[in-house]
Image 1 (cartoon, helix red, strand yellow):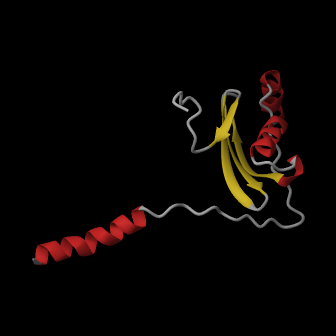
Image 2: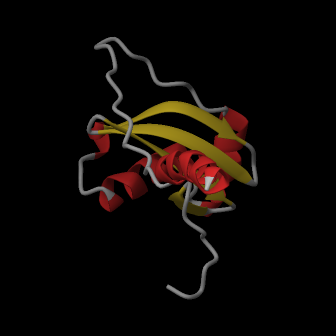
Length: 115
């Protein structure tokens, strides 16, 4: 009986906290916030395949049904083949990724064919 109670006392809180969903993070930016500048060499390379920062900004605006001016980049990590972007959209922080010339939310699988 003690073993059963001990197991329940340990298992229930673990299961409860494991099921909590991540809440959308709020981003409160100051009025004089400056976006990070992308690398010019990488942007000129990505211009050939329409995968620049401005293309990502358009993609995010259409996907979230907002204006392009409402999309603010917080952090970006880019290479020629891929990139990770942290973005503030209408007060919510979201993360996007680029694989080649394909943009998607960071938690989505771009190559999932079962959709």
